[in-house]
Length: 460
Image (cartoon, rainbow, N blue to C red; front, top):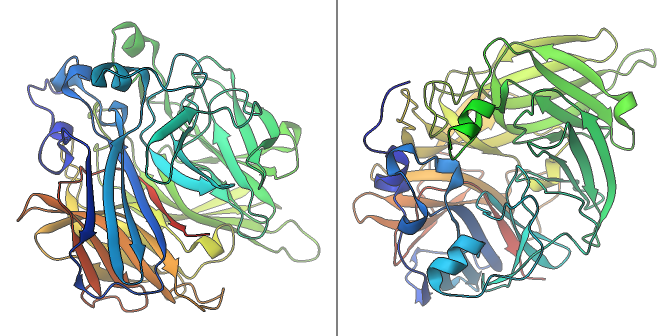
């Protein structure tokens, strides 16, 4: 592992901003679709200097969380806000009283995803911390155990079933000898917690969902006691020689029903989607997973996920034969994949991901295009943001009146960093017109550090 004197995750497009802003009536370049009525929110690390003990050793995943949001309505960008999520250390640095709510395991930095569910805006993280409820204007309300129903921490990546509206999640914490499969009802309360025994304390960043199954990723990034004992800010590392496996469990089943399938050692931060395929003669059929596969991570690069370029793969799990077929679908570097929310856990033709060019430790290689995968034709097209812009995760928002099966009858939206101005920008494309310029851009009054995940939350 190379010795660092600087940190790429505190510089350039990743560098934190130092103040909260509220700006109204933003400039719109082009035309914002008038059917966009809601909030686009994204979260990511934005560490305060006082909370970074050793900049060279700082891990990207551990920085104080900051939410960025825009309110869109009637073709206008009504406001932009950015707010730190109030952990104890953020509140202390700002001279505020701690935010209400119980903390789990002493963990309360929340910086990875933000969703709307059961009328709440929830900021999320993995590894043991509770969700944090925010107001519509992004102020911290409380750290929440979902009305006393969440026994431990939650996850950064719940999957919402588009039919039932429930959230499905796989949570982990270093002190537990098991994962927890959690289902949150449409009322915002946990209705199911199923322990899944595992060894070595794996980091489980994502899960997948099909109409029949919850999919568990047990891969060789594990809790590392040596790193923790040395005071490392992120105590998870690549476990060379450890097996990689994928678990398939009926959604209403138990751990006794779980079936494991071994795959070649790798790591998956994010799955694009998953779906069932029926079997012949009454068999169980197959489960098809589309994943962004890293050959390894947190091995050479211990402060971020840049050991090598991740690519899109398809894993086909044959439930009748107990076999797995692993296929690489292209060699393009990419991350932060999404499908239309109406097709989570169902066969999807289209998927979108941010093109990146990871060249090795410390070089995450942010790109200027959103890739559009046509999984039916095995082709890839690009939504260009412009040479000076670096883009992150994009979300697809169905147009008003779009048929549920029309995945790309939608607007595609992301936040970008414009290197020419060193400021953030909201970008909106027509999802069914890859190659075209954006239909709208909204320049922002501040830089938005490259972050993680977000959501479109429509006005009720």
